[in-house]
Picture 1 (cartoon, rainbow over the protein chains, first blue to last red):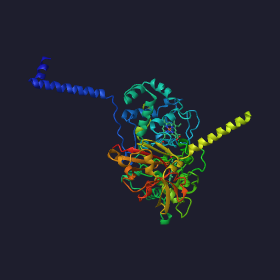
Picture 2: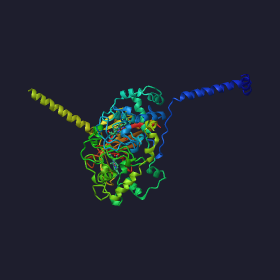
Picture 3: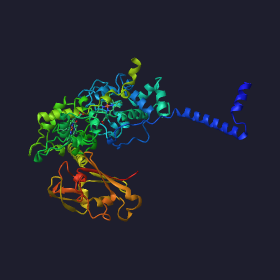
Picture 4: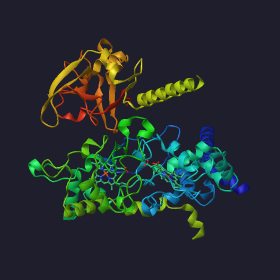
Length: 378
Length: 166
């Protein structure tokens, strides 16, 4: 001990000021360590990654910033069956990763064994969506989650019961504390965490993205399909086109628009009109994303088309007239004065091969989006 | 007597229902944001403003006569800063116009103000003597000096005045 003290004394400067400075340095260091230890509880911002051509036109609510801890909790909750009345259903039941977070059914089956009114939507690039659902009735991911959680034909459980069930677990109070700094679980925090996870579901690595980034060369057929998809027909100038891009275009192949795309002439589901009350919105639905569209059959708000071939037949030959049919589908034809798009069989096949370019296998296999509860069982 | 009264009452109630339903389903135009009086206008409310018309070439390459009211007058009515007030920070105000289908376009406030420009941007309700059709009306913006018609937004539902916050 004596020796040690002598050794330290030798190492340290012996004059008064030097000693003082050393002590000061030491105390600053230990203070910094102390702060770092305390700060371990402050959630870390989640770094969003997406190509520049997706743009930054999105709003994340100031009171629910995206953090790594919040996203992790949100992922746990997304796959949590305790959030349903029969403890068997989670968001993941109707939104399966391998199907780009859709469920492969025309309409979905809820806890009460009855069917939902509409087709489950793919959850892709929601960061850029501002009005959620087929009719755009929900203005944020935070508020959206309440619908599936509490709807008797979906998960069918009140938020209060969900809070109680989660509070009784070993894991969740700790996860909520890590994500939000408070161990108390509340309905709002459940919604916030789910929203944080959903914002990270970004699909930006399809062959189409790679083509835009200059790292993928499309086949001739894909290229033909892409051109048809993006361009309007102009029989006067002998230019063939399908004009899909008018509603489905851009680097994200998503524009937030609401249209009646002519699948019906009378409307058992009035769509957007239900929300706005405006008769001009009768039969309008949100233009859904076409990202991973080859994986998200069946198609349309009621899942009426089983295949992309049927979808192309619709747009080419069967668009139905009505008061609210989109003007972008009226009188758009590859024939002079034609009433329908009238694509050839080969053109339909080409457009479908372009649609397959939108499949993003990185997205559907991303381990960060998978069911975290399965790890323990593996 | 009693029967007559109930019959009459149901009739009145039915009429009321029809009227409210009808009122609900008519398209309206909302002006909101940095305004002193937010407005919700029906087509008939525009009768209070001076009618203006423009003969211009539309996307179809043909000339049409559009009739309506000056967008500026509507903004003025809503109390949007204009004329001499358009200085300082008011010069970074924008007008975001949204259509029923979610399509959006943007103008800077001075682009609409008669102290800055002679162009009269129109909120049109008529084309060639007829009310604008479904998918185009009831309200459409006509900006004669824009060579490309992309900002001649159809089916206008809302006009929001805002501050650029960068």
